[in-house]
Image 1 (cartoon, rainbow, N blue to C red):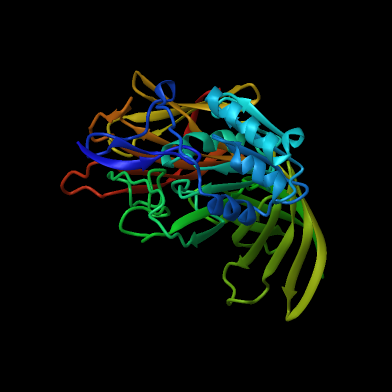
Image 2 (cartoon, rainbow, N blue to C red):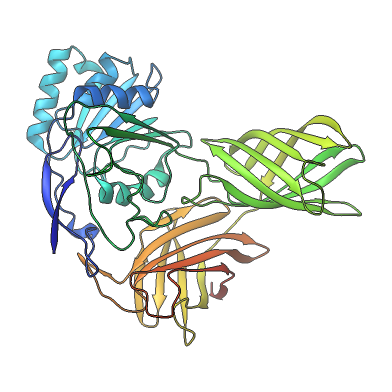
Length: 442
């Protein structure tokens, strides 16, 4: 085993931990999470984080792992936030935070909650602040997607979100070494898996600078959308199929306009909170001819905005509305294993407390899929096969399985990929396939 310095927690100390080699990973099982140690964050980093998250008079900010309360206090005192909350498990830090808030004159506008940030509710936040480390960021992101509203800003000092690219980032000059985290493993440089570390600053890459990253929680827009659009020939049925992934900054899909000569093509879409923009490019037409652009908003299963169309060289703007097909993924879905031609594997999706929960099944082995995202009419998931507490059990099946699907005409359609931990001679490093699993139980 090799050792490296890893930073975990809001304003934390440098802790020496084992970094993953070929036969181990640093991610802990949720039931045996290591404690997140503490050291005070620099005040200039606090100011940069709150500025980048555009904290103002309407902001409700939660600091996950709030330490001595300096981010919570600064949000109220320096940025005029409406409310600020700190979640901290250490009772001594809670007492220190309350004393600091009293001295700063903001005690009546802040609240410090003693609790576990992985279980405490923070759904009312408009801004969430993090300085947790890579693994804690990955562990908590499914919860953030489940409970936070589209448009909520997530701001992190130094540590990223694996394959989920930041919407904004900046490098901040520092006069001292600051704090870094580094852990090297077989997936460190693969931008398609949660273990990706290329979007973080660590030894040898950043000099004496820090990095601050921000994400805007996107609306769940995956699925099949149907509506009507006005054209020069009258109203026509309009159909969109959108696929959404964390690992890609844009949403992809297809469209179809129904008439005597169906017009079809592909879509590139961008989501910023509940703001959706997409560009339609028809098939079998020269680039730039008969294009369409949509600019609008998504609220639950309704899409509303303006469609700008170029028809015969003329630009026309028209209102456009669409409704998303209802989607129920409940059931057990089967497909051939990506690592073996001799057997199939399954994904069981159930509803618990109003949210989908997934289990991966390979023979008699059942593995929970904690990193599962409900994107409305579609979903996205990642899982590391072969993980056993703090280590990996190496086999041909060990690696990251990642997939997305949209429920279209009663069937799941999407893409699935597998990134192995070890690559046998003559085998491909990664496998990518279109994915149409078969429903075996409902």
